[in-house]
Length: 131
Image (cartoon, rainbow, N blue to C red; front, top):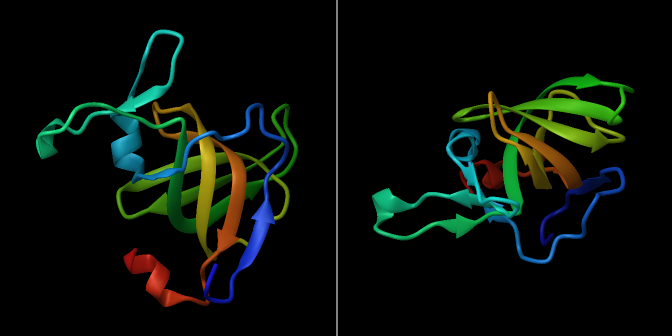
């Protein structure tokens, strides 16, 4: 990134992302639906637009809790302005920091769960909170 930031890589992802991430809030991701055997779809009816495929998303939030181990590796719980979400497959995560996560959508309910592809610490760059 253009400003100083620190990146934290996630564990191995089941698929490599093929499209750029779509920035979403936890509340938006909770409303996504899954196409039969296909990608997650974000409704944009309120904007007068059709469904948008969101296999890879970008989310930002405050790191709340980090849990080591487990069958799917370490996980982290973050909070954005609309609610909490969980990120799987993280290795090193700074608790209490403002983090950007790029990840594959794993689940949406009861709260969004992502498989991390990349995590970046944006704590030292307050401009990122407004993005």
